Image 1 (cartoon, rainbow, N blue to C red):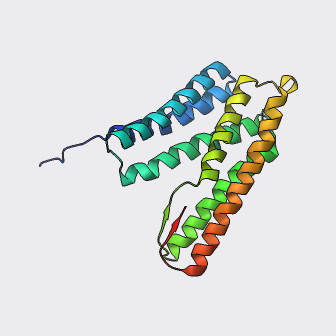
Image 2: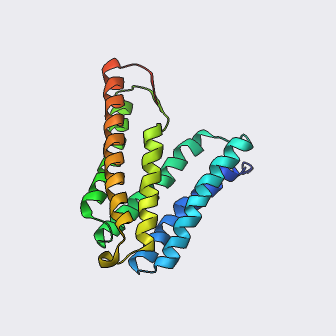
Image 3: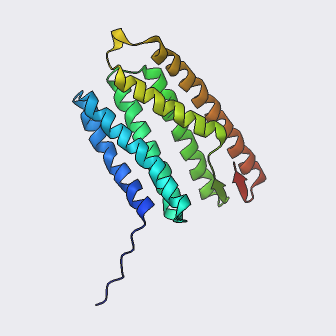
Length: 189
């Protein structure tokens, strides 16, 4: 029996490693090993930029990578906000806003897919800014994990992240509703 030759795409491999770092990150958070959590979070962030750079520079973009990359990003961010919210290192309301936005987006995509409305999703500028704010908020929280001694910058980031996440979620809802009403192939940007 002949087995197919395994070809490894470097950006996809890096993305899979990033997905696998998420449970390790959560374990470090649960054990309040914040320096190690910051290290894993930083490695995941660098690998996110690295896999994208390699995919573009060496023309190694794949359809699988287009799905894996946002899964890796969202799994790390959702795990971060859930864990830090449960541990009360970030406000529960912020965790709810971040998680709710992603659930609404995924449900919208599922409905459009079930209705056989084809879409191609590309992150919008507001979505990219929101992701950066969410990542920065987690990073600041990991730097200053003790609630009573939190710097004012962290509280400001909580509110900036909440506003950007809400605006981004509403933006995607409008795009999704327009796509649903038109019922045809649409490009969501």
